[in-house]
Image (tube, rainbow, N blue to C red; front, side):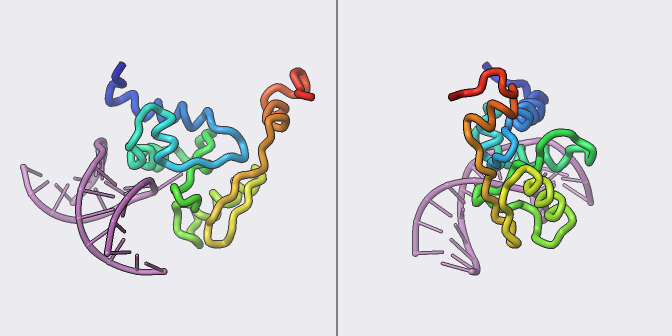
Length: 119
DNA sequence: ATACTGACCCCCG
DNA sequence: ACGGGGGCCAGTA
């Protein structure tokens, strides 16, 4: 089945909303998860158009080399870095990002509390 | 219509 | 590290 052209951005946003706290992914990977392989630029463009007050985790998207896409020292860089740190990621001064340690248990608790905790 | 520009990606010297 | 080539494609001039 083929997405209509104007549904691609919403597919990107849906894939973004489905990312996990403390994780990071590349633009290309985001596009692929949205069913749009090879469309990294589209993913980047969609993110660039997000309203500043967006609740979506745009900051979890980094370059394929695991670095923040913005220039180090820029306001956008600082913002993204701060949000990533807040989720437990490590971010070097140059922008290299290491995802937060995520375990099945912590993810389960993040999503469902202790209701279905795993031994 | 052509030309340049991006929060990009991959491969090869 | 650094550069070149190709893919991708909507927006802007």
